[in-house]
Image (cartoon, rainbow, N blue to C red; front, side, top):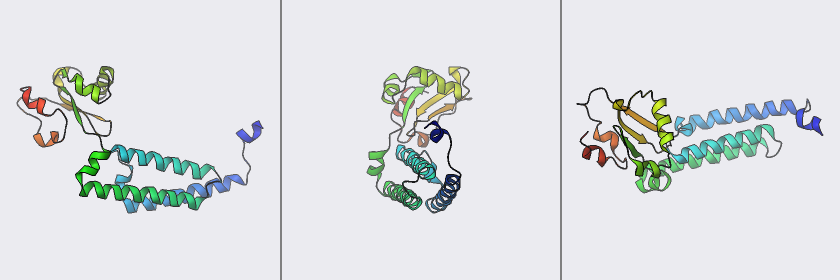
Length: 184
């Protein structure tokens, strides 16, 4: 019983190698067709597809069932869905609105926007951790902090108080109107 959990037969190892090589080649081919966006975190949808692709790969490589060609078919379908959905998002903005979160302005200078922080499902501790990751040593270095659609947090630093963040960079960011109203 324990041996089956720890060891495998020597006939199984070549099958795992064959599965891994086949799935790797399929993944490379599909990525070349779909483009590098296939593994981006541009939206929550992209992240979900990336996780699904990893799950399919793992299942096929280490299990007899489903067979390799089922795995290649599953990968192909996931890539096709992602390509199709990306095309729909480019064509109709409301499609992106259905699947993507909106970026939120969660800090202006040294002022935390607590309502936006809550809506981003973040705590003040999460925010402080992201500020540390961005090498912020003092709040005076912070111009803006944005919770992005992907769950990432962008910390925009400032060295010169005469320079403002370009309006184009804040297009579509919830709470961006507060930046101008803040007098920053």
